[in-house]
Image (cartoon, rainbow, N blue to C red; front, top):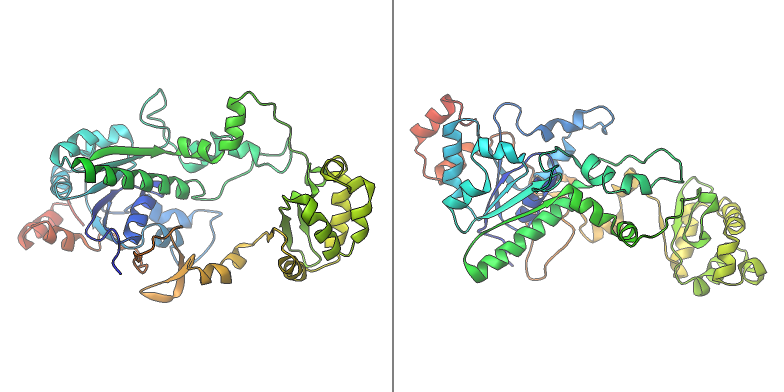
Length: 401
């Protein structure tokens, strides 16, 4: 079984996460992805896991995840010689990915007009914070700002009205945004099959953020009136609420089919009398008296361990999920069984996270660890036709490393 993108040549000239993710997914399906980094410190994302507040580890976990299966070329695009090398690589490439600021692209010789003139079959994949037009096109942005804060997500996911805005996690917006850019690339490749010509495709953090918050954003576009989010204990629906068990674990209920599942829940918790309580006789009554029902369920869950509840709920077909801690995620058996988590080829003891879809009839590449800075510089230049003496001179001149 072949990898579906085998033979596809990709240049990843992005930094940090979102643009790089598109290259990572292409590499997962067999594309040859060359990661371009500046000599010296390389991509600034290499150093993010050292920042205060980040999880402490001997491994560069962000880099492992977001740049696996790529080859590394350390290239000084600020030099004419470095730009010449890139232009030579672009002539034979299928896809070029970048999230460099729009003005910087021209300085580095990697703007769309320049590269498309070298290769009319090139798919130029552009990622930005705020789009490529409008008064804020040049505004720098990260997923914390353009995706999380600007989209309304940061304001809307607070535990209750008036609470401090909720902080996002690193890469929380970048990863789904990168998959959007991957989708645009695949569409352009499909279009190229029909037209023979490349295309300029793109996505942005602001577009993906408001898409992720689409239901609430569409409500706002329709002039809806928003209800302030109440504290958990005063939620509108006790059967779509989360409860703390005796052992400290939390379980989230999602009993959408209330009339069917409320009696089942009541029996599981040893409170069959709730079914005949007029306060909870139907959906409208349960909604009106949600605060009372939450208090009763709080007390019931507090008498039981989360593991016992999970087993009982699964046996009875209730829709729920445990609120997982990160150590629980790292050993989740269902994720292992479905290859959501899988080992690196060059280190079976270490797991990584699979790209979130599969295609029957095509296998993925077994994950390989990402390149060290400039690890494959000589190899890539030899493939591009550079002689050894020329490579040595380029290194001495600082064009490569």
